[in-house]
Image 1 (cartoon, rainbow, N blue to C red):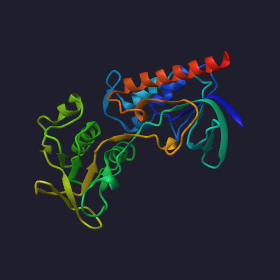
Image 2 (image 1 turned 180 degrees about the vertical axis):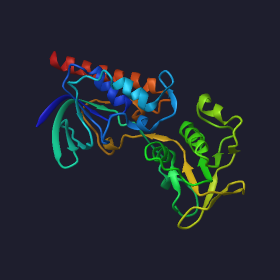
Image 3 (image 1 turned 90 degrees about the vertical axis):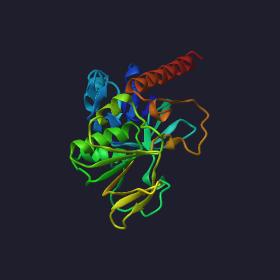
Image 4 (image 1 turned 90 degrees about the horizontal axis):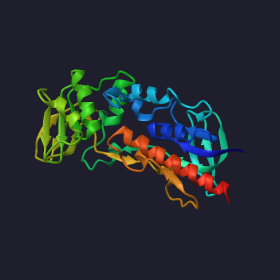
Length: 286
């Protein structure tokens, strides 16, 4: 069984930053997709670092990535034991490894559309904001117009901009009395023909096989061929669910709390790496 000083789960900005800070140790960085970068790979809007896109920012972070860090792509961690072993599921095989320290950097996940407390079925055309962002930026697929976006956090506003730029009629529905998100993500709305409905939300989805509209709690009926849920993010700690571990787990980045800026994620990951290094040093001194 291979042994690593530190196992880092998640190859987004948190996992990359933690691994870089661990240079000099035997580290395994595990990422379930086919490349490092996580969600930033599909974030083609600017606003990362010095006004870079997500891929540009990741490229800069990886430019000096240590060659001695072991990276396992297309690999999922399916189990972690109290004995400090982990099961890795590769594309065509399974592997057991052991570790001294564990850093969890799995980011966050969107609230799934199935959790929306909305009447009606879930016909074709209902997506999360992240799914639509991937459709547009990675696969070049534009969802049909008109579209309703439920929620006005940053990802909802960013997707609204992508849709508008691709000639999709957009209506933003926000249950609060004002839009959310960072000011820079709200600014583009000024002067554009994007409908905004506040103090209301979607109470019913219309359509059977495909969505053809929504009904709001104030009674407004909005025609729609696409409904996009931008209803918030949840730290992804599923791998730890229902288990208690007799050792410290260094949870960092968006799987600890949802950070508004990518720089905060990187700093928190470095903090976690330093804590792991200190534990290793302390145990070696015993």
